[in-house]
Image 1 (cartoon, rainbow, N blue to C red):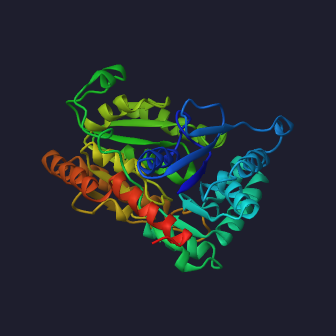
Image 2: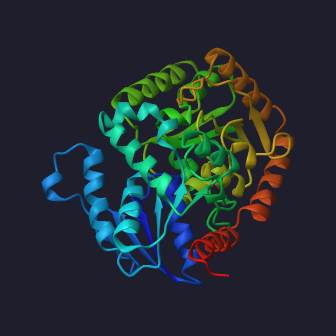
Length: 396
């Protein structure tokens, strides 16, 4: 079997969970099948990867049109593959066109959905209509769609009612259990003036509406003064959300000590140090198909305080590996809390509870590591993904 994977991200250019997923999936698939990767950006050193820059003629075009230009080139070069597998809307059109052009099946991995991220109109302008069209067209024509959680499967069928439910399979994200594990080093903590002897709550994520960072920062105003707040937050979607978060961080820093903002993307060795010495991880997302960041934190042996939304409840077990915060959300696709103040108050209460009993937090952390070992290994995810391929190709 020869599979061509299409993705915007591929090492070393990774900035989100979808890129992590593709990198790890390719490693495990290569053990059993032939895999070629088509990705965006600068040339890669990896033998299996071919990178495609934005065509020069589209250099000043809207970002969505630039994406389509890359997709056209990737679709042309998919000739010879038995199957094409695309990840995120950035590559969905490329997969769809490759399927039509070469007569091969197109499989999609659904990491997020454009109808559930309407705030992206702030980032893409009219390009959001183009990204939405590309995703809808590809999903409705795909031979199979892999949802990263049961919650995501429900979102797909609700967002795209013309998709055949039989085509939508659930295969969870996985985690590199060796790369993400307890790290007893403390050099990174010293670098950022984090005190390993004091309790700390860590947030890791891009500065985007879906991650709920402004709600988290407001909730942190209610934390015990001795709790450190570590924010590994960068790559803002827009200047507006960047300014909002910067203002909230500055306000928080003016009222309490131990608020650390790390805007750079840390190498894994440094991030695992910060996670391993934290008391709890915070995932205040208002939209999260699964949340690889939760798996990464749990693999390092810390519990999670997270919103009860999307695929998060399939990862974080309330009262066993962490705390889930209920949220009532509007139904316009934004995920905005119906009562933002109530959500912030409930989030603050859960965060305070998580650091109120350090022995309990440690026990939840042990259970967290056990859960990811038992349910989210990449070997298992690779086998399930290949089963989808075989089903699409009519192979036993």
